[in-house]
Image 1: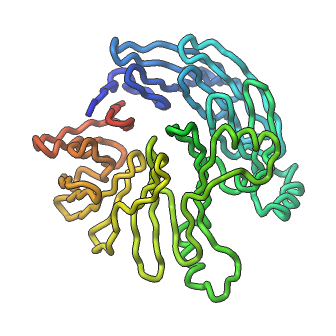
Image 2 (image 1 turned 45 degrees about the vertical axis):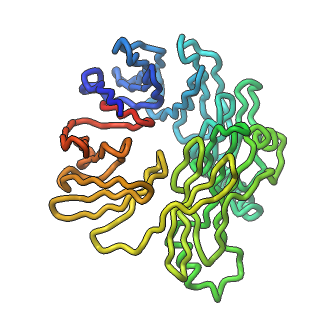
Image 3 (image 1 turned 30 degrees about the horizontal axis):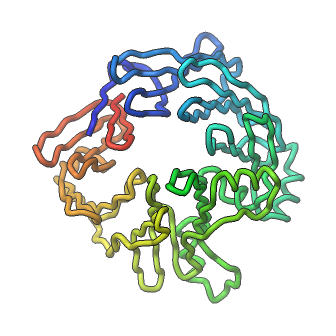
Amino acid sequence: MKVVDIRNVFEKRRIQLFYVDDDFIYYAEEKLQGELSNLYILEYNRDTRRERLVTNYTLEDSSFVQHIFAFEETILLVLENGSSSIWVVELDRRSGMELSRRKLNFTGRFYECKAIDANNIIFTAAPDEKSKGFFKKYKALTKCDTLAYIYDIEQDKKSFIRCPLISKVGCDSLFTVKTTEGNKLIILDPWGDEETKLYYFREQRWISADIRDNIWICDLDSALLELKNGKENLTVHCVASADIKGMVRYAAITDKKLYMKATHFKSGVEKICSYDFESKKIEALAELLPCEDNETYYVENRTGQTYKLTIDEDKTLVESMMSDFKGKYKTAFGKFVACIENRFIITNSDNKAIYIIDTKSGTENKYDCKCEIYGSTLVLY
């Protein structure tokens, strides 16, 4: 495990990390100067331990919220204030030079966004006072509460997405992954939350609708082209599905596998399963047996690794469901966050302190700061 301690750089500063690799850390910092808000994009060199200003913007409207996405060569900024327009800014990651800046207008008010790749941004809009009549008719036709758009930066073209699936699931349910067969788009399509799905199972004798969870996968480039061309039904493959008798929910994603929690309501059986992007096979990895009152399961959303936590007054026992790892830490150290390299337990105490417990040497270190985990790198700031 690599620990990058940059607390001295960020002491008494409020920053937002948005990209970490082996050489650099990128982050944003917003400062108020009088009535104006200044947004700074900065780079920290892990080798020289020096900070560099990439670029900065003066936000004349202090209500603007920034959404930042980093790619190999560029940084994308989406600036919005919940209105019916957004700014999209494309920056060169090294020089900070502004490559493009566009204002996009649309129907409704901004709701959410996600950069699918370095050239395409999907964003959704919800009804505002001016457009509520239009949205009412739209929902009657599609059963969707939001509109979805795709913006092609290179072509400077915004397109309305006619595929109801994208409007229904929203940006947070879209994931991209690089596989040996090219870039793929993962679409999570659950039916409500877990409590709602269980309620429908209990009331199923009164329900005739197809109550179903789905997880879809498709070729990314093909999907983007279909969305821009106004296709209503994407060419997708169903990875996993569960009708009213059960549930399948997203757990984690890596560059090799998609992890899911599968539940059969009648038997009560719950399993963590994985879908291999190369072999296209689903494998059951761990069965989650019923817990005692002081036990719970934790699935790391970085790795899909699943742990059973037994929480007593003094100690918390951590047992991996997918390896022979066992470790423990003082319960006073807070909530379990992650286990790195089957050795280092990371905990968080009330968002005020981070603890690193080395289960081999027995050492315990406390840091009064925040942390982010990228692969096997722990960033303290």
